[in-house]
Length: 528
Image (cartoon, rainbow, N blue to C red):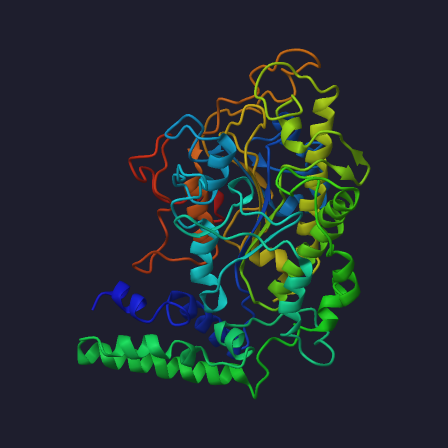
């Protein structure tokens, strides 16, 4: 009997590959070993950056805090836990393969490495990386936690996550909703006080909601067990189910379900209370963005609240989700079509228009906005501080003899390299945490093997002058290989149970040819 038939027959919800990893974790826990689950967190920002102010001075080699750029300076306390991969390119590019709006392509293809549809939705034609990973590593194979700030949107320019072909997975923009879902898991009484979040499993996740993982897929099991299979296969399945039921019974522990550290005390310790969540969750309309349905004074105030208090609360809620082990694949997306008017920034043009150097949707021509480069730098620095805040939060929470950050890969992933060039090569990417020791830390790694450079973002735009070449000609290794590396880092497997070697529909500059350069990037791994 083929393995893929086995997995398909039981629905994959709780009894497929993701559950096997949870069983291993539960066994290790029973034996007294602390085995924190591995996780991937994606911090996503729009419109690129000023690349020559973003990249560190080191292109390949040890990455001391002194090598960090002015933009990345907030990450200096965590330099020893940073991996800065240089030389990746996203697929696919504007006017290469498809000639659709570059932002639509950058969003739809970013986490799918697939084409986008050419209808009005312009959604991706494949499931995105976060859903592919979540099916394997999340408790019960549940969907990823995808969060954003600002106004809710289903427009392709604000959609990064896709649960399947042409199926958008909009981000949750309301901290109150996320909080309500988590508080139902809280233990009564005080937390353990150890600062260590015990490892939970898919069984914990289901039991916490009053159901057995096996019972939840009973119909799938019945259909599967009715298949024509050998007696040996039937015995293997029954033995496996017996093990699963035994493990799940042990997980129940008299109804304890979620880990003791998943408590109101733990939430309060990282700034999550009913009052703080309410303050970070604007109750009225949010405006101030291209897709928010108009502007109003109250709406702009709500936007500022959502970007500041709301974004910080989303980070806290992500950490709490990790403490409670309800999700191991998390995304935080900041929309790009907003005007920054908070935290000392007072802009009159939206981020997208500033990234074009024109202040609007036009591309090319003159740098019409006085001081535009400093405005972009202010936004870049604001995002760097937010990413550093997220990294610092994860690094402040103890887990299994280390920190939450240590078992996680927390990646800052951009939409574009430079916003005026709309280029997808030489992407500014940084990863904090090693995913349980799988990834290198404290280094920059040139994956292309030749000089890449910083790009020309800061050199070719003079106020009132023409916009020059802001792109960069280096950095063209398919981002598919980075995704494969991250999938292996968090414990994903291919169909045969081995390491993942391929992701996406294509890895060239066109949209045909499939995956021509399979495998992970060994130089990014601690073993490489």
